[in-house]
Length: 153
Image (tube, rainbow, N blue to C red; front, side, top):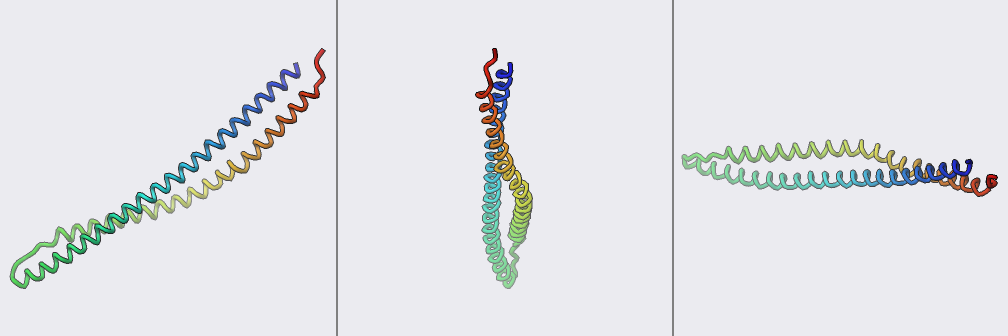
């Protein structure tokens, strides 16, 4: 009866060690995927920043042209309305400000996440790896004890 009990214990410990190993592997993938998503978010915000920066420059140039035309037209007693270009410049400035706020917010959250994620990675690579090693040692000890047991009569 004792041999069967130790065999069941060994099998259970081996299954548990394999589960810990799978858990560590899967959670490491989760952390890596999170890093990938952070980089995608940063790249997306950077692309939007660049796109709106260019739009702002273009709209400012168009507003400047319109204002020059308006000044020339005013000298001749005519009126040129540049309000649409002024509104377009304001919209681009607001969008750019909004995106930069989001970039700042993302960086704040990334810093907080990286601290937590770093501790989690340390747990995965440190504590769980030590637990796996300890389980392997326990399993080896039980297997050695099983080999030394006298056969039952």
